[in-house]
Every structure is written in C-alpha cells, then in structure tokens.
Image (cartoon, one colour):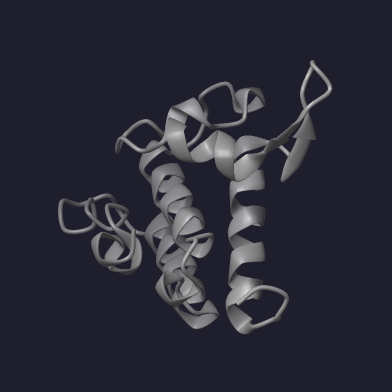
Length: 127
C-alpha cells in the first residue's frame, strides 16, 4: 500500500541508514551527469554475490573494516529495505541482530562464533 506509514516504513528507513553508513553515500545522490542515483539501485547489483561487500564499502575506510561484519550489516540493510514489507524484519529483530554483533566484537574468535555473521534473520527465507 502506497502513502500509508507503518512500522515497516521505519524499518525501511533504518535499512537505508545502515547502507549509507557502509557506503558513505547518500540515499539519493546527483551523478556527474546531473542525474539522480538511488542508493538501493546502486547497492543491490553490487552485492548480489556473497563476499562482494567490498564493492560497496566507503573507500575512505581504505579496506580497514571487519569483512564478515560488514557483510552481515549489508545483508541486514537489504532485509530492511526489502520491496515487500512483510519480508522486512521488525525493529526488535534488527536490534537483536545488532546486539549479536556487539557481543561478538567482545568474544574471542572461535570456530563456534565464526558463522555468526553468515545469515541474519533467516535471510534465505526473506530475500
């Protein structure tokens, strides 16, 4: 439904913010040719393949970021901006996923925790 604000609209907006943080780009940017480029249209084709998150990352980071964590956050962002609102997570699910990241940061890297960033929120069922 168009024109109706829902909690899923907030989730969508949060997903855009996550992608802006990763990419260093605005939601809508003007290109050199004077056209507008939508962040969603720019991001999606670049990270369809798993492990390709480096293609969207803010170049100012100069590759200095945890790749699995960045991939996890990018996937979470994509879930939040899903074109079908019913497939978007609710904010408590998003918060839970982000808390996992925070906890993982303080844990020792063991094989038990290495798969933490593979698929947030049952991504296979949503994308």
